[in-house]
Image (cartoon, rainbow, N blue to C red; front, side, top):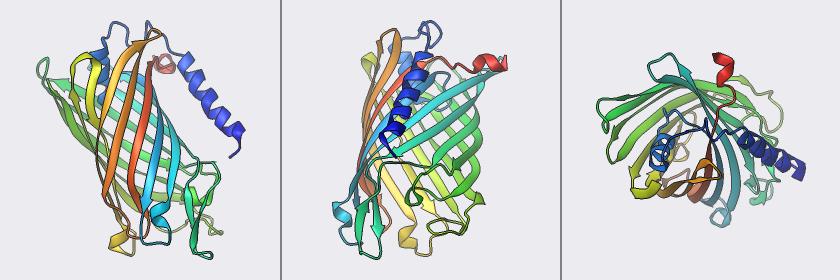
Length: 299
């Protein structure tokens, strides 16, 4: 992908940020309240997560331990109120750019960097809500679908498949913060043309994400949300599981009339595919709270 594509990504970020209305996007909400809502996957605040990820790899393939990569993810979070009960439909697309992803060349028996490229686009659409029994105790829930669109501009970065499946999540809310988990599974529901580099094989992968947020004073939080994956179609069980653990720190503050969340998270992989997989990664996220410009379409 050329520099013009990166410009388009940056322009999209700025354009959506420009839609923010300080009076509508979390008006009257303190930094502490905004921090709690942004940690809640069933929360009411629209936002735009801009995430830069550095990944270090390891594995049995030649030179696997010396491979690393940078990537960028652009993820709007768009909640749509449903009725008067506080429930909502939430749409979360995730657009990715890989800058120097290593790809293994079996002919050369070595790795080579893939040119900067778009990755597949992930998304979920859920019906969700938060139920509070008291001011500081309650639970969150959500159910819907998760999917993947074959938008990768390099076959090594995507499956050339349309994928989808069910998604469920839940958690508990307490005065100290919240904790919960998300479970989804995706199958191949179309795509794969049988050509070189395409993937028209059966696909079934489970994603299990656990998350917690511990509330600290002045908009600070201790947070994490690692993503566990298991590939049910892997022919070798040693290649199927990726199991990360992690922790991070986040700060939500008000700048330019908007609430902004700044987060750094460290993830370590206890288990990864033996041949090649992530060893550890660091994520840097900047997430402004914005107005959802599409809410009016549904009223």
